[in-house]
Length: 379
Image 1 (cartoon, rainbow, N blue to C red):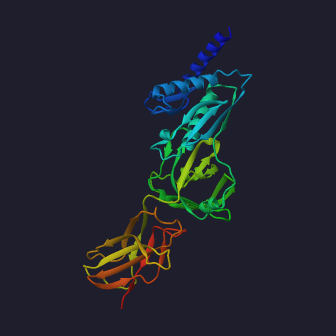
Image 2 (image 1 turned 135 degrees about the vertical axis):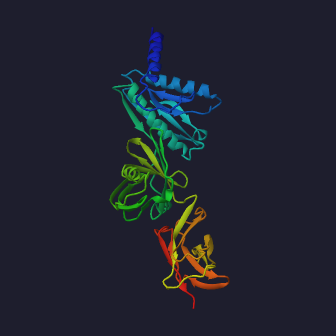
């Protein structure tokens, strides 16, 4: 008799797995690796694991979800969903049953740490279980390391410009800026926060206790940004942050209710410095004049300046100001490196104009665009 009731409970559980299909949007095309609960799409597996084929792995996960859905209500009214690191993988555990193990292969190609992938899958699993188990208390317990911050961790967190690489949301969607340099956040040691949101700047405060973090951006400029700007979404997400973590060299800010995570890097794969070169004298340049602009790293006082990037312009009769844009790889540089611009205007071997002061740019809060470089006449 008991076996018959177990089979009946499992059948009801499996029905719940494929139940309400229209509650949360699924990927446009169904796939053999899709996992769903109560009509809520959880994840898409693309490979097998632990000696199982993809089909066997999907079958195993569905069976384990069915086991969870079959738990008697009197025994398990509260159903916790935990994410725990297991070596280089992460386990999603529901009511003491390991339902899904997320491996590095599952996160390959996403630029998202394994633990964050597991958090996202678990958040959607929680949504599905709440649909499939009405009346039960499904408790989300996403993973966020909470040790006391080490001194070097505080050094990495504050007084560094963090560039937004994108946000990975709990519903499986991604928000990725076309230019991370236009979306930044910088935390000061005195509890203040400075933000760039596309064409606008903002300021506010933050509070950090261990790995718990809250951000409040209150004041901001009100310029009208370009079409397609992510300004509003970026600021809304920053104000919804409730925790942080440090996977590798990244800063990950988790959003309230496990709705997603913002990912930041202290360096860009490609950075730019742009502006104009001009001079104050009222004189026209010869048609064969050449404008040369260099971005230099002068961090080491006892060493020669290192050329980080440069651009040569041939005005061909055009007069000042001369627009420039230098692209460079910032990854070998320290986030607090001393970068300066040097500019010259020459005709053949003759130097006509040159900079006479070091103009800091790009790091430590100095601008990287809209820069005016004034050169002086060489007498």
